[in-house]
Image (cartoon, rainbow, N blue to C red; front, side, top):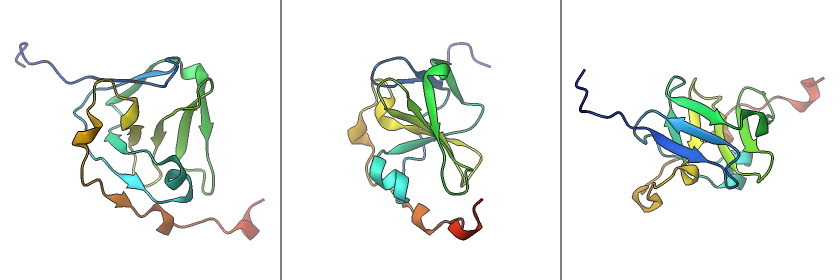
Amino acid sequence: MDSTVESTVLKGSCHCGQVKFEVHAEPRGARRCDCSLCRRKGAIMLTATEDAFRVVAGEDNLSMYQWNTRQARHYFCKTCGIYTHNWRRSAPEYGYNSGCIENLDLSTLTDVPTRAGSEMSLVDSASKP
């Protein structure tokens, strides 16, 4: 490997700085989701493989929200409430909030597709315990 080539490390954090994360990859896979939760958050999410995403500070300050099938895990800072990342139901990968990334020019995220999360299956409330 050429030692003169630096790998990309994106640094992200919540608003208050208690939660910090890194993504060891270029920004990719920008998208929105139209499920009932994501539609309300309105975040443009980027994609990271499991081995490229790492919480580096404040893991104990994260709160997790799950609903419906409880497969997706949505993480928020307990202090400032910022939505930082999620583990996706639709694929074994992370989504992370583009607005949390330092020095990322959000105006470069154009023509962002919307994932049809509203069409994913729902658990029948009558079958829930």
